[in-house]
Image (tube, rainbow, N blue to C red; front, side, top):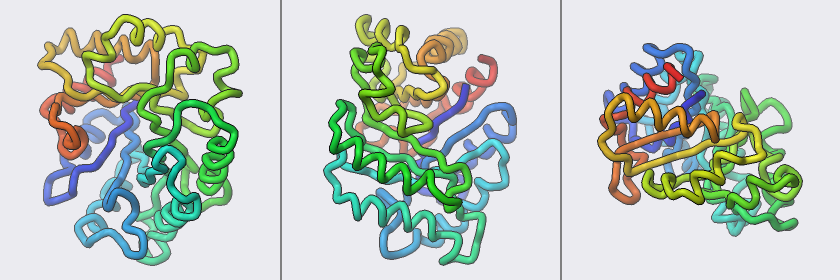
Length: 257
């Protein structure tokens, strides 16, 4: 099991230290960290010097993969703009003459969940811009629709009539912890026909859990997905802008799983 980390924390001195500490303490846990300096790559310019100094530090850990953040506005953003943002990330090493600024793939946020042929073609072109060639080390693609309907996940044609076959990971559920516990949602996610290795679950607004209960939650998520992120931050729009006090415990539970 692995951590999919929305690393939207501004990298002031020491701000990313919880990730470095976790990656060092748990070398068998893989972290995929999503970098998001300007709600995207700072199109038309580079990230500020704080980011340029900090991002290369991620590359000193073999178990940290980096992805650039690109929102598609549910395939409503002009495709040319999406491709420009992908290009901007791809060009960071060349523009800065620093290979340690090379990201390993792209995290597409706000992707559609219900299948439509035109949106599939849109996302296919965007994914191919990452998958084709050698601009991205791992050519890794993540989609985050926020929710994939259980009817899709439990369909025998899930891979044919969805966008899952375009991705390495799809975030099938991003919500409050209490909503994940809802019986119809919980049961449907656990009977998905899609391989766990292709799926991620992100839960925020976690309650204060004992280690034993946290271990159990991680085990239950693992029955659905091989990728997770849990945070007890409960403030809307701030869920991923800081490391919650439970971060280290979550990593320990993932390592133990």
